[in-house]
Length: 162
Image (tube, rainbow, N blue to C red; front, top):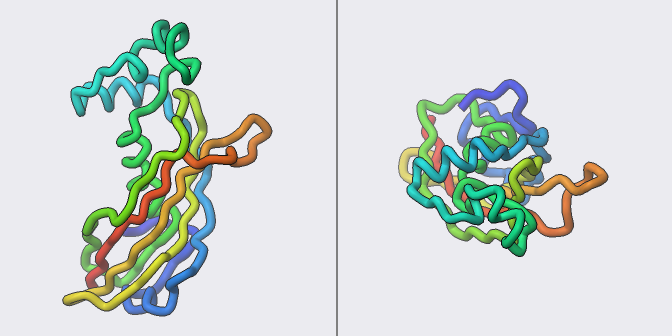
């Protein structure tokens, strides 16, 4: 649970209790490459042509080229969350699940993505503290700004134990 570059750092799980509604900032941009998409296809068995057949996706897809799998995009929450929030004084953190996930926009391969975080809720849980964090995965636009629609919005639920 340690990331020296995290946007928000708290000393202990209990320190999360007053942070509902807090903005966690944004992460640096990270590229999604065709190699990553191909590896994800191999790992999941999802070789749909819109993801892995560059020539066909460029010629036939309404997206103008190959796109990342939605679940690949969702998996980047695991990359971005520790960059947004570091909870010190924990013996472990556990991924409890997701409350809501949406994919408003496709992610063309080669895109740059970043995570934006907000703490939605925090509550005491058996032996620890449970936090729901909304991670919005933004796509970099042509001028370096986030595009109008994010790639993914996920409310992830984590439990932190002292």
